[in-house]
Length: 410
Image (cartoon, rainbow, N blue to C red):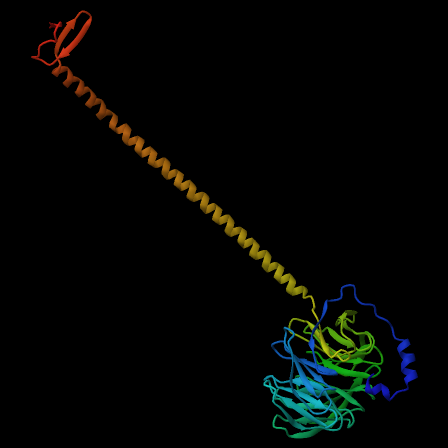
C-alpha cells in the first residue's frame, strides 16, 4: 500500500474503499500484453523518441530499459529509492532519489552520476527545454532546480506534500500537493501561488497544450481539471486508486489505477471508460507516438503495453489500400487493353499482308494468260503437221514425217 496511506486511519481507508464506485470494463477494451520485465518495484516511467521504455525501480535502485521488441536490460544505477524519472533530448535519464535527496543522471551508454542535490523527499521530476531539472520535494514543500552543470537551488515554495510536478511551454512549474489537495504554480522567477484545488489525495499531474492542468485523485477515483485561470472542476471518473496520469495529442486523459489493475480513459468532454487491463498495481503511465499506453506494474515488476486502435490511421490505411487496389485494377485494365490493341494490330497486319499477296497474284494473271496464249501459238507453229490414223490424230513438227501408219493431212 502507498506510503501516504500509512499515515491515515486504516479503518477509514477500508470504509472509503467499500464506498468506491465500480467502473465496469469497456466492451471495447484494447488488447493488453506484457512488454517486458523491470527491476524490483518499478514506480514511474518515461519513453524516448525511438519508443524505448525506461522505469525507475524504487526497490532496486536502478533504471530498466525495455526496447519496443520487449528486450529488457538494466540501463544504470541510481541513488537510493528512485521515484520520479524523466528524459532529455539527448536520451539522458534522470531520477529523483528519495533517501539521499538528489538526482541521478544516466547516459544512453549507462554511465551513472549524481547530477545535483534537492530538497527533502524528492518525488516528481520534470525538465525544461534548456535541460534544467526540477523536482517536487514532498517533505520540504518546495521545488528544486538543477542546471545541466549540476548547480542546485530552491526555485520556490509549494503547498503541503508536493508529490508530482510538470511544466508548461513558458517555463512555469506546477506541483500537485497531496496533503493540501491543490496545485501550486511557480514562475521561472520563483513567484509561488496556488493555482486551484483538486479532488481528494491528488497524486500525479499533467498538462495539455492549452495550459490546462489535470490531476489524478487517488482518494476520490477521479481526475481534476484546472484552467490557466484557476477554475477547478472534475473532468471524469476513473478506476480505483488512480496513481499515474498521462495525456495524448487529442487531449484524452489516461490514468493507471493502482487498486483496479487497469487504465481509465477520459475524453476532453469528460466521458470515462476502461481502456484496458494491466499487471498488478500499475503506478506509472506513459504514451508513445502511436497512442499506445504503457504502465509500470509495481506488484509484478514489469511493464504492460495496451495497444490502442487508431481509427484515423486505420481509415487512412484503408483508403490507401483502396486507392492502391483501384490503381492495380486500372493498370490491369490498361494492360489488357494494350494486349487487345496489339492483337488487333497484328491481325490487321496479317490481313493486309494476305491482301497484298492476293493483289500481287491477281496482278500476275494477265501476264500468265498472255504467256499461256503465246505458248499455245508457239506450240501450234512448231507442231503444224497433222497425221491421221483412222480416228486418231497427231501433230508433228513441220518437215517431220508422220509416224508409221499415219497419213499426212494438210
